[in-house]
Amino acid sequence: MSIATENFLKEIYQLSQTPGGETKPGVVAEKLGISNAAATDMARNLAAKGLIIYEKYKELRLTSKGQNLALALLRKHRLWETFLYRTLDINLSQIHNEAELLEHSTSDFLVDKINSYLGEPAFDPHGDPIPRPDGKIPDTDKLIRLSTAKQGQNYHVRRLSGSEDEFFEFCRDNSIEIGQSIEVEKHYPSQNSIAVKILGQRILLNNELAGKIYVEIKI
Image 1 (cartoon, rainbow, N blue to C red):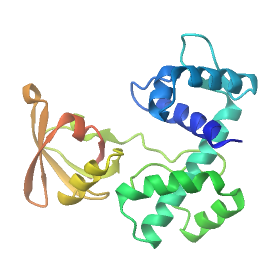
Image 2 (image 1 turned 120 degrees about the horizontal axis):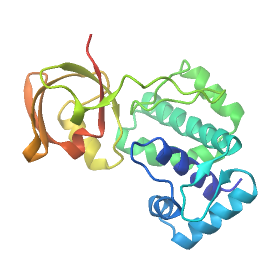
Image 3 (image 1 turned 60 degrees about the vertical axis):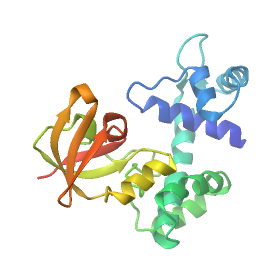
Image 4 (image 1 turned 45 degrees about the vertical axis):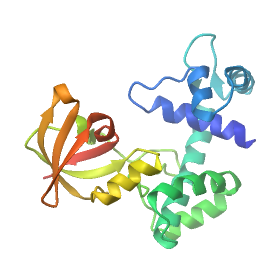
């Protein structure tokens, strides 16, 4: 299977798992940096192979076969991210691009070896769930976006879903990392922002950035 095909299937899956995410060919095209025509042609070809369901002007949907392929690729990607982060000390803003290159040339044999070596992790360094060999996904139902977290409540950071270098640089500079305790002090709806406290330091975040940070209530 070509790299373009694998990326197309993976992008449809990831968009389908994003709240409010659309999977129409034009949206997938924008995410992958290809033309709308190329995305439509790809969708038709993959539909003919039984990997997606394509209907003109409608959302693209993966078949069970297509979803299994997407999850297998995502598993390789997130295990590589974990390996690069843990063993080579590559930072969060760099592991994604490196994993993008490695995932397509990794055999199932090697990815199983990496998984075993790492101790079968359930989540990657960003807090994203790593699909299991059977395609099942670790539970993330308890996670909420920091932008919607309850005022006066304490949470743990569980997932950083941004992809830009600047986002991870900001998180690093402000001690926003997986497992970190964070207190929601106050919402400012008219200013589209939220005040939080981390390690005794008060930080003001806009809701767009806070929406990329997923937290779980601290028990």
